[in-house]
Image (cartoon, rainbow, N blue to C red; front, side, top):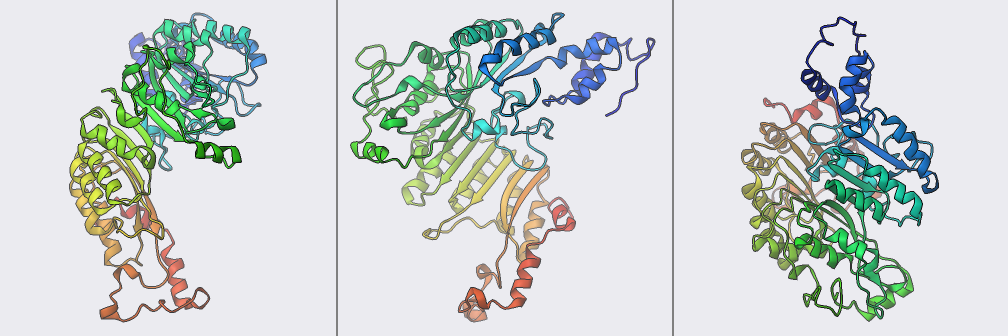
Amino acid sequence: MEFLIASPNSPLERLPVLVLDRICEYIDDESASRQNLRAFSRTSRSLHNAADVRCYSQIELLIHDPDKLEGTLKRWNEVLTNGRHRHVRRLKISWALDPNSALGRGRASESPDEELDEDGYRVGGFNVRPYFHMHNFCRPSEDSMRGNGGGRLREHPENWATLGEFVSQFPGLQDFIWAAGGQIPPSVIAAVFERKCRLHHHNFALRTLVYDRNDVQHVSPEDFVLCTSPYLSSIVVRFGYFGDSGHIDYTQEAVMKVISGLAPNLAHLCVIQKQSSSERSDYQTWELGRPAWKGFFPGTTADLPSGRGRLQSLVFAGNLRCLLIKWEDHGPALAKLASRGELKSLQRLELISIKDETTQSQNALNILLSSLNPLERLQLSSYISPKSFNIIVHRHGENLRTLSLVPEADEETRNPLIILSGTVLQHLSSHSPRLTHLSIPINRTRGDKNEVGIYRALSKLPRLQHLSLRLMYTIGPDEEFWDEEKDGPHPLSKCGEAKIPSVYLKEAFSNGAMDETLARGGFRPDI
């Protein structure tokens, strides 16, 4: 975007301040670099003053080295002179993954200028971060979503006290984002609570709830204050049954207490499953079993244990709106909560690892999908049955804006997966008038009537803007549409991989190709 230098008598400069502010709002893409807004601010002094408010509305402080934090804060204070502190509305504290990155630049693992639409999606593909219905600046980074960055800060009492003083300088702060380790320094917590702004913790950890089975501990005052804070708005947390050295990790039980009402304004929860260790001590720990959690303050009346100490015995707060969780660990419990009407505010849901195809597990999944209020965004992966798909269409179709389905099965799967044929997708199209983002796998069948029917069905989605198709194809005639009684034995049924006829290999390569006509086909109403 190019801007002309405004003359002193430019009509643009004579516009009212409120109008200039709206112009700046339109120009500002709120990316990490905000190039357009900064270019506009350089055209003249008056326009620079108008753009100042938005240029400094959000800042990210990158910590390269805690020992050099004081110098970093000094440079930021120099940048924020002339009263610019009052313009800051969102403040993020992050680790700097690239030691050579400049002050205020985006994280090394993400493009600072990645192109997002109004819903926070990358134009080039799907991004899990939109499941957090909040300003894009406040959403977790990809590193946080992968569970990285959760290490404990080294003890630097003087430096962290300085950081708390820095945070307390922003009188208009609305959102504070912490992505610099699992522990927020007390001075920073105090400053956030003083400002009464929303707290987004991207590496939520309760280290005092990881302890030896024979040395039961009370939660620390710092951890308990965080768990009960009315300012806690969103968290990304890692669940695991055991910590290092065979210690028991009760973070999972504590977080379920937190979302049951201890943190009354917590609205966004992302659960990341820890990977199990292969150490011998961990196997021995599993054999010893996992004692039930006895609460934040064992042996006192301040926090009585629930008995089971698991998700089934807890109640969700009424304002939980976004949830990303692993089905195989928490699915049946979620279904019970939904059937009791305790997830009424949920708008966005992602369930991963739906690997259990047993009747009990699938009934629980169907109960969950049937009991929830119509969702805006839904993402499911692994085993998805035709019955579950029909519930999605009829229960949530009218309200869905985003749907991502990844039906997958292992070799031992006995029950049928949903096959997204033209007929099935036509059923989805007729019940999903608001769907704008769709991600699904489809079977390519050499452009025959079955494949054409898929594209024709997709073209009937009236508001579709982003379509991600995972193209699936087979070598040789598709067994799905092969009738042995009518067509005889399948031609490859007795053929080894080394003897596949070249005609079938050529067809497979052709079937896997993509061209512009195919890419645009899903958006053509006349296909």
